[in-house]
Amino acid sequence: MLGIDWLMANDCHWDFTRGTLMIKGQEVSLLERLVRRVYVEENVFVPPLTQVTVPVRLAWTNYEKGANATEWMLDTKQLYQGMVVARSLLPEVSTKSFVRAVNLSDQPHTLSVGMCMGSAEPV
Image 1 (cartoon, helix red, strand yellow):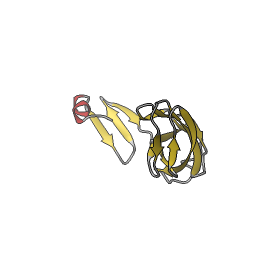
Image 2 (image 1 turned 90 degrees about the vertical axis):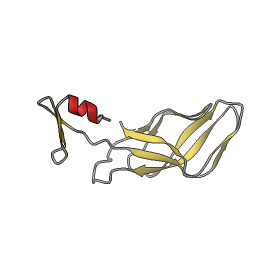
Image 3 (image 1 turned 60 degrees about the horizontal axis):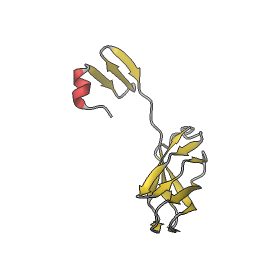
Image 4 (image 1 turned 30 degrees about the vertical axis):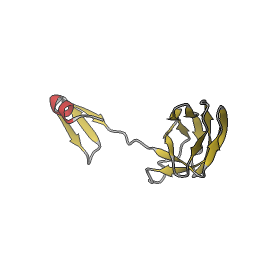
């Protein structure tokens, strides 16, 4: 994210058509960021001090042909205090997969259908 103040202070010109950003006379090509959101597929009860396998649904943010032909990684993320989703490698084409969630707390948690577990990125 670039702020308008920074863009102005650095004499920037953004060419959306060509996908470039000119910064103080130097042209920089912009890369499209591909992301897949990872959502809980069904309610999962996670007892205290336990790890579970969570069925997830993978949603695309880019539908261009061939743009998603890569493996994907969901990075570690704290969902709640003491509740963590583990780093996971996800398939390139399937919309269904599984990730590990670990409850390090002494309280049970429920991961509800539709909860966003995070964003997977190409690797």
